[in-house]
Image (cartoon, rainbow, N blue to C red; front, top):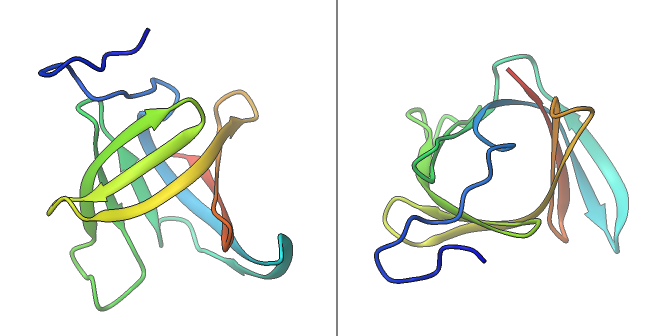
Amino acid sequence: MGLDAVGSSPKVLAELIGTWDYTSMTALKDGKPFGTVHFQPGQWTLKFNEDATWVMKTPSTSNPGGLNGSYEVHGHDLDMKLSNGKPYFKYRFTVEQDGKVLVLTTKEATISANRE
């Protein structure tokens, strides 16, 4: 059983904790790859903390300080919210290659990241 009672900690997963360095993002159209963007090391990172918070450094100049918020894990679903409580993204995720690769998937895209 997970911790769902009022006042309990949000659900986190030890496999996710740490910093992930995005390697690629593939756009999906009707579930099929439609084009891929590759990232330089350190260009786009996502850090999951043990306290169920996350921090993202993006290549976007519109968010030079990055983004941050909280997250919850439900099975292989990752629900990310911004620090103001607004929904950010809900991903389906897998951790592959002995914990070295994180794959995040939505209907629109698949993101691959390496553990730093």
